[in-house]
Image 1 (cartoon, rainbow over the protein chains, first blue to last red):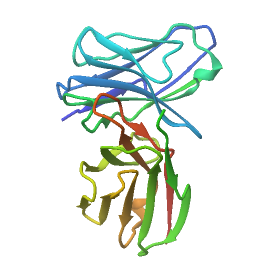
Image 2: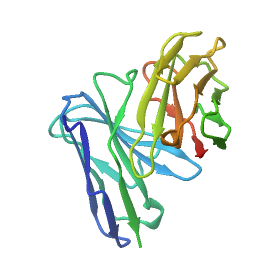
Image 3: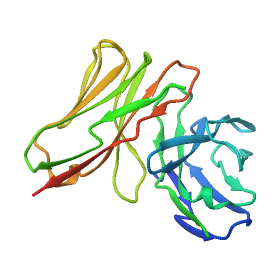
Length: 113
Length: 111
């Protein structure tokens, strides 16, 4: 039971570069989420998706792009990375709704120099 | 938007002691979740609460949905070293909105 996996686990890149973080889940959950975790802010929602081809903005969407062509994958792209996007990024999924508990991956630690 | 406060921010306890922490909001929530995060890993769901006054246990962990619906409590009995980590609460204001996460309580257990 692989659950939800994120890749890469660690990434270092430079400002202005494009970087994509991958998220894959094997539960066939409808909903998937991307959060960033920063000291003093807890978990903040970037984007979420209710199903394939349906995405919505969260609390902090600026500078990020998501897509969901397949139910099991929900990649997050930083089109032109900035230092303020240095963070730990978590992907999560829930079975069928916003009112259901979310299950998290182990995160991607992203550093932008 | 809705915000959650967690208390205490951090705590150091002796192995074997009981632990209490809470999560409060200025708004009424309809669902509370408690997660634990170990270093280098993602949050893991511990307990979910859906009704005011509900008391739910998971092993040595017990969580309660406050009667006012503005708070929730997590207790850990007879703490052990593997209880170390950050405990997050999450609340849902209404079913059409995502959960809001608290800033976490960092627990350290001294041998």
